[in-house]
Structure formats: structure tokens, C-alpha cells
Amino acid sequence: MAPPRTVTLEECKKHGSFEDCWLIIDEKVYDVTHFLEDHPGGSEILVTATGRDATDDFEDVVHSTTARKQMEEFYIADLDAKDCVLLKASGSQ
Image (tube, rainbow, N blue to C red; front, side, top):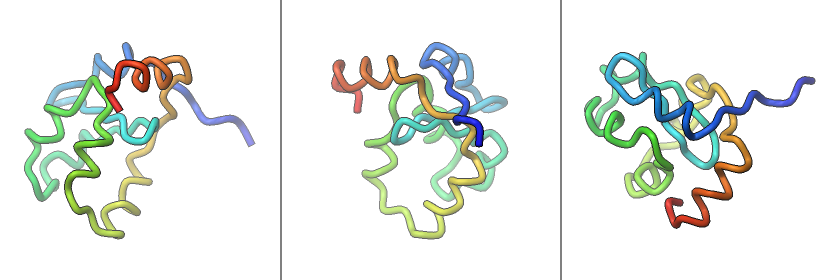
């Protein structure tokens, strides 16, 4: 089994629009572009959480077990380990 793909924070920052939306949650990267229209809280809330660690935003809202399971289909990569350390050091997590 191949190790998971990794992407950098800088790469994630390039995907912060309604046409191309990646989120970082718990050191994992999710491409939620095709989910924006279906998100119960609206698309804007997801787009405003791009380019940074959105874990606290995600956890501050009560998400159902079904919603958490649904995230699996949007998973595309792990965040680069160096960027995980940087986010923790900056208090962005």
C-alpha cells in the first residue's frame, strides 16, 4: 500500500474559491468543491475556511456521524508534516 499523498499549506492556499475549494481538517486535506452547493450551512462558510487549519471551525459546529463519514469521500491528501508543525506552533490549530 502506497503512503498517502501529501500537500503543502501553500498548495492548499491556491484552492480557496467557489470553483476550487480545499479544507484542512485534522491535518488532512479535503476537496469540497463539489459539496459547496449541498452544504447545509452554505458554501460561503466553507470557502472562508480555506488556506488555514479549519479544524476548530469544523469542531465548533455539531456535525452528525453521517456528516463525518461523508468527509471520507472528499479526502485527497494529508497535510505535509512540516506544515502541521508550523500550524501547531502558530496556534492555528
